[in-house]
Image 1 (cartoon, rainbow, N blue to C red):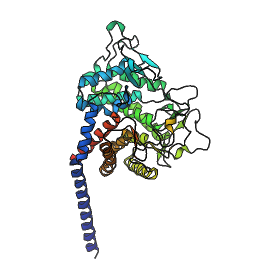
Image 2 (cartoon, one colour):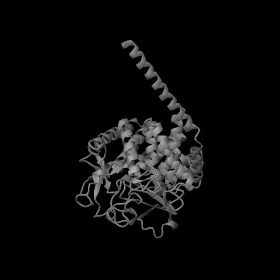
Image 3 (spheres, helix red, strand yellow):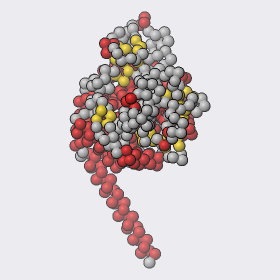
Image 4 (cartoon, rainbow, N blue to C red):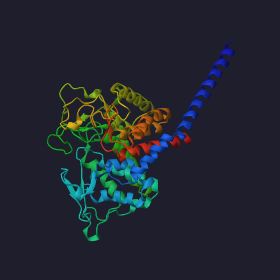
Length: 445
């Protein structure tokens, strides 16, 4: 009898394995034959072929956006133009290594209110930096790493990117190579944004990955009213950049530098787990405050789930496979509870009305509960990386469907699905294009 039961159990397991195998095969065939993905890719390439600004309502070329459509740009734009756009950030790099947010034609700066910086050998351009956020340096390193990986142009790392005449070079960085510029950028974060108490980098209080602080009507400049904090998004971006820089140093035969950056990345990762991961709640803490919270006493900010920062943490390898699966389940549940359309939901629950002085940051608005493909598709990329293809495909499709239905790539969506902002938002196009490519490659294995 026992032998018979064992044979029955073995047969059942074989049937289950065969069923799972068939299901996986069907999923892969479905992905590879999905014409919706093809259509969105074509739409994305058409948008990327027209420039590098964030979208049709923007004149600036933002590095945090450019980083997320680098692969897309290189699929349709001449390599030299992509490289020249990257070079521009180095020409506007600060003496302390900081990288600006964006550059723009001088003729397009009127009335925007930024504190601009200028470059004598780039007389037609100006640059500005949102000092509230701490992701510009990390974004540039990641962008260059993608450029080198996709093009194979390792020589770019030893090139001198500046367009300056030899007699006008910045005395602080005369003739610096691309790799040296990147190291300067990472040193800026380590030297100027580092908190010794936690071994993590700092920024101002924002909603998840956002760049608007709550204390002011615009909210993009640090000042005496700023509440400094540590969050997962900035540190996950830094971890990604440090890993990328270590690999770039290896490619450039600078192994000692590679070891230094990899060691810092490993230290940072350990500190993220020690200080930012909330094991009891199974999520990342919204903030570690360094000089108090800007929000009312008694407000339970710890209950807020940050979708965007969590997605970047997963991409940075700061979560286990089980944690990524649980995070995805939590995001799906949050989307259902909010009545939103995709896991691009910024955070849940949102901050109440009036918590941010900027009127764009009311409840369920913009970075405070808006639905952003720009980050939702990054979570899709993370799911693919962790082998969760069914979840990735099922959760990607709502974002693909609305891009086609709305005839473009909108900056963000209200939770009811109403599109808002630029309809040619290249960041959204770029992350969908990359998610599609990653899914197809996984399905082809």
